Image (cartoon, rainbow, N blue to C red; front, top):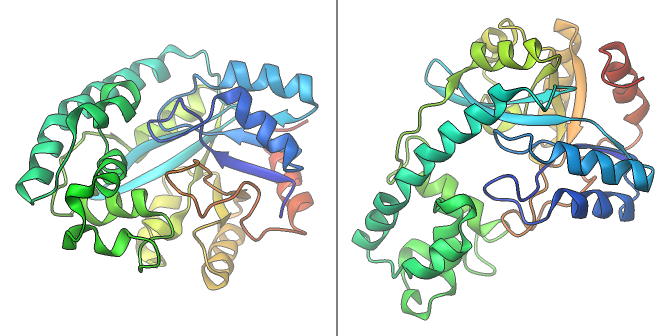
Length: 296
């Protein structure tokens, strides 16, 4: 358990469960002293979270997590120390939300074509901001008795191979890029994401590279050369070998080392705040943030 967690989500993300203020309270209760809510393509959580953090004696770094792409690979880039009032973030969020809303009906249709019973009313009731994600589809489908025994859902049932985080695992297996029911969304490029973050006073950090870059040296090197200033080395998704690999890469390129659980709530129930195997490395991480001007 660590006292710093720089990657978590609130209801300002399309898959978070708690308000920004509740996230601060949860961090305080968990013994986390330095935190950052990095919502998907949104920094609306920042004002409320920082106000609550000041009340609770917690340091809250303004942050965002941007979806972007490099060549044909979808990536997530964290921005720390950003100006959350920069209107470009709100414009980007609205553009992506509009694209996501347009995918809802086709996504429901494709799931029904594969024999799943999807209660549309329940799906939209659970949907944040009017769009039905793969995670929402999974939650509704798994709870519907009409889907009992459906082979498409077998591995997400309790005790099965994908049951640790059933909703997001369903999304990754069925709705993510390259999967059977993927619906394209136009994301900004990695270079655009980096420029946006840096021009708003922030520091761009590559999020959980073990999820998308993997240990592909050529790809990782190309990504890091685009202007990334840090790597989320310590992540709940990384095993010890991956952590060591990304730590060495950060040292090779002279980049900051950060940590984050990627806590969401029910979407990823196996993930807990402050748990990403970086205990004892917090002072090193804090010192790196100070050198970049993120912390005083």
